Length: 322
Image 1 (spheres, rainbow, N blue to C red):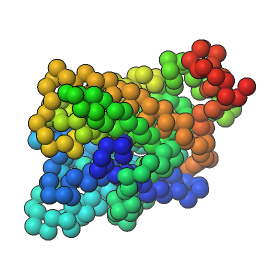
Image 2 (image 1 turned 90 degrees about the vertical axis):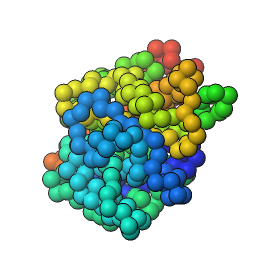
Image 3 (image 1 turned 60 degrees about the horizontal axis):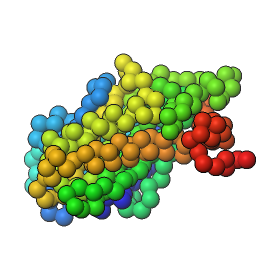
């Protein structure tokens, strides 16, 4: 994600080692603080079972006017209020603001009803946002999430793309918390075959939040097309797109140039699909086994078993554990 120039990422993790495994992740486009009040943006709901605060205005006007904050479902409104305060402090004459805050439900591992996220946590994630390699796995808004039967979390990735003779970047950040059967490089890695049954406690599929950033010049209509492809990428890793899974994508560009023609957009679509797929896999393969509220344990993907299965399917050129 941070390979896109000017896009920063910060996390605040709330983890007491027992009943709380939650947090905040902030995506901060520096361009919003350099005299530009908005950036072209779009939202796509693959399945709208969620609480994406601020989404209708983005959908209507096609612009982003705040950082994007991700957190837990029952903390989304407190996080939105904290982000609102942040925006008001920076625009003392403003009378209307549209904080954009997404969520997934981490109640399988975290005591979500305690609503532990405070203004301090949100402001810390915003203030700590940097352009370095973002932390992945059980951090920030991904501290308590699970996906595809395994412990999951935050994942990021990027791709360079060629469009209209220029090399530019597409980046993705995901908060994985959805159901299905983990699939990597086309090979199923089902939890019921890789983790002993006695150790499994599978939660229902909940949601996935995807944020796509790029410096390719695009308008809001084109960005909605990118956001749609971002949700499509979930199928590559085995998502089931269940009834209760709130699957959302937010896409924005940092460019202030005229949009590229639609005839040149296919490489950008391909970059989005690949970046989101890799970010989703990173969110799982960087997570660690976590025991949370009620003594429930969510196991990390067993790397050795996964690699051996991929190698057996001819998807790897080497066997790292040989």
